Length: 253
Image 1 (tube, rainbow, N blue to C red):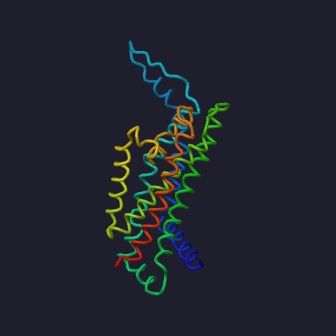
Image 2: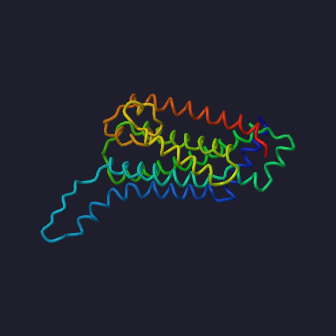
């Protein structure tokens, strides 16, 4: 356990030194700030483009519009930035030989996998929560009195989907030594999940956690409808991390 915390500290310090944490915080802060501002200013921007003979009717923005922008930005660009930053989580150290030296000195391979997954989860969680807090503050200020339903659960669902992607990325990193293979595999998994979003399996599909956020806020979807998607995601995360440990233990470096 002591080695786990030592290696985790090393991973977090490395995230700071390589500016991964800083980049994530800046990007997600911008997303959190821009989401409510975009929702507020977009109708005014459209109304300024007056064309003779054409009338543009735009409803007044609400808090739902702010959160729509938030979930759109995070589920698209935010997750892409996260995956790109962490796609070389194992390959970089293996190519430099630094990880091999530590393993030959007695560091457990399971400790390496768990520490790396934990460090990625910490960076993702801190960045995501920063974006949420900033967006919440601006939304309350710009749209006072507007009520949204199931907000915390909707935020939790997208966070869990991010954790799912990190577990897939880590698993792919144990299979392929180069930097770009894990990136392609993770993108392929997302593409497959999106293509398989059919009614028969939709309630089990982890991608529903990143697609039903606004429906939760508008009560078009109940939290109970995503129970199996949440359960499937948690099971998949455990399987991916467990499989990563098993493969990495047997892997020749």
